[in-house]
Length: 200
Image (spheres, rainbow, N blue to C red):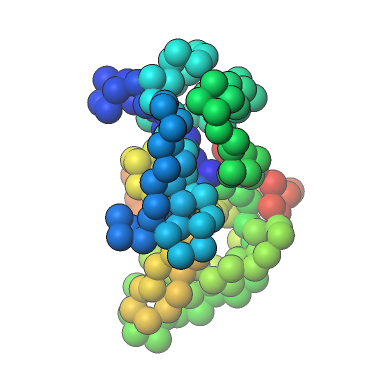
């Protein structure tokens, strides 16, 4: 679940995005300031927009923001005052987690890519990685599908040279960490890092 707010850029609108859905595949239901976006076929709610959001509470931050208790209270107030019920699970699970690379093999169709099997705590996922220093046995930072990088890029399921990839193994630079090395390479975490725990 990602929350966004940029008053200068798009106005006083709070955006909550669970999943990106194409224009032709979504159904938008608006009641006053409260908008819910769902998948046209299944009816599953994948996003909420609150117009005139500052009328319902205070929003701290700009760009990608944390779905705090205060923000959840704002959403509930906006829903109630516009006669709606929130049809979206507001629980925010960490999208940047510690992963353990169980296996790492060279991509069969790309010399500079590796296909990794990464344990992220509650599941093991396949991630295609282009870092020169990636190898099995490392503990790393994984940006899960749906995560928003400091650059604004949203991590999506992808297919790279024929191999499915469900997330990204991150470098310190990609994570926006201070004193990140300039050379290419993923951030390797200490051995005592707990697999599945939140990194950010």
